[in-house]
Amino acid sequence: APDSTGNEGLADPNHPGGDPNGVQLDSDGTPASKKTRRMYRCTFPDCDKEFAKNYNLKAHVRLHTGEKPFTCPYPTCGKSFMWKSSLRSHRQSHSSQGEIDPTGAPPQQQQQQQQQQ
Image (cartoon, rainbow, N blue to C red; front, side):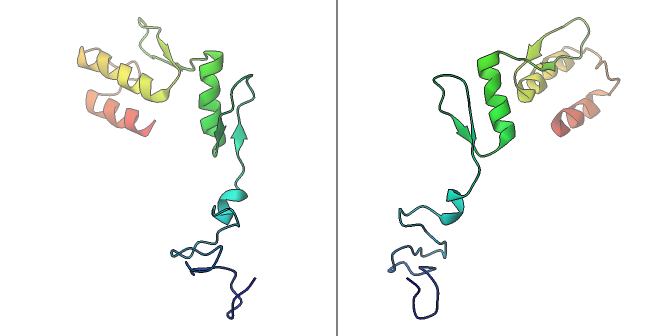
């Protein structure tokens, strides 16, 4: 029910549905905005994981499928990884051994490129 100002529990910690930080809460105490957020659910059997971002679900699905889409660009290597961060770390091992990056980037540019990826 609205209070004398017409607000329904906004910023009134003593009012049901109120929060001292001004966040509107539902009757169960959770922020109202969280209720309407779309969740992306894993559809693999016996997996009940949910994600707020679709790209996090896509990364999670790789655990089920074993997909490794991030391949090392060094021609004699051939390793692939599930996570871009794993490839980034792996590429450091090549540059620390003095190998020339196949993209032609000098070592300091390699690090900048890897940080941007």
